[in-house]
Length: 485
Image 1 (cartoon, rainbow, N blue to C red):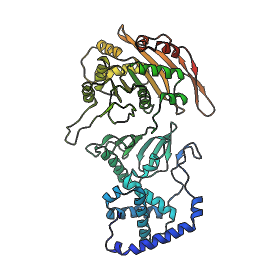
Image 2 (cartoon, one colour):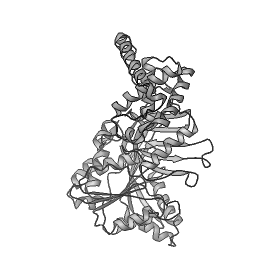
Image 3 (tube, one colour):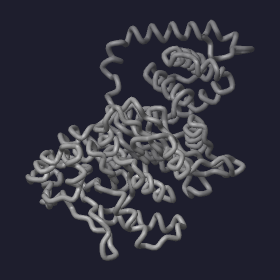
Image 4 (cartoon, one colour):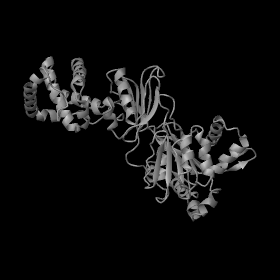
């Protein structure tokens, strides 16, 4: 399959291309041992030689080679058959690009090594069928966040710590092209008329893009990645994200169909914890998930996934989360899971929890379990519902059973720092009590936080609901011990 159209001088260079490829293969065979010895090392993580820079490659281009790469890429754009390139296997595409580079290097009288040619070809292919310079970062499973601030300022998060990378785009236009490609993949657009967009990658990663004039320093891309291996509460316990007794309590709560709200800050792991909790749902139950950008990874067989839709260029066609929550009530769900409550849908979610859809779950941005209750109240009020505060608070107290707060601490470890139960509404306030809290006990020489997960209340008001499922004995055991991490 030829992805480049050859005409005029290009056609006359066919023999040159073959000859150049034969010469290149001869050089490769002759220097095979040296090349193998010099092969690039895997990406360097921030915990290795340089704690501040995440290095993706050991091969550095000279200014001349960089200029050759950019001019070769422009030349290819004028000759490439985009449809053929999209359909071609990646290996075949890279082979043809390498062949093109051999001819173009000879025409341009530029000397490039075999490794440089391979790296340039890989960069070009990434631009053609991938996300350009971001592809090496997306290939590293240890990276949880990719943050593009400008063409030359790209950061990643590994192990809970941010580090700058050696990745660079060709310019602002290049960053915008990648951003538009991400949006187009999910049928959305990003331009001056619509400068902000939430999208997702094919692997489920969540993406936010914001461009000028809203972003003053240029196009900004934020990618939140999720583990391809579904994390479970057991795995979180092994990683000291929570204690064994906290795990037991959450397992009992999910099995007993308690309504659970997961609170925390940005990047604290709310969605990850929600995914872990969902693994405990009975496979026979029908679940409807509602999200702005689909990122939940439920493993149950009976799941209906809904995603909101922004308005089109004419300003019509918007489908808000609130619309989806109301529609979900007509879909005969056993449980409703809302990715995040952040607006008017909060009231509809509370309605669902209060109208027979026990076991529903959602997430919320808040600094603690108690603040989560205040934020719920504020969200309902800000949505324009003209209800007395007492009615709203009573509604929240009736709907929620458990609030789980997760935080990313300064050592980069995400921990469930608080679990509280919602008791009732009395004397003008929503009453709640903590069941578990993380107690800070200092840090070690490496900066890792030390502490323990304390059970602070063994008497709980959710016991009656748990007893209906025959798990009251397990609940007592879960609330009977204190553990250290």
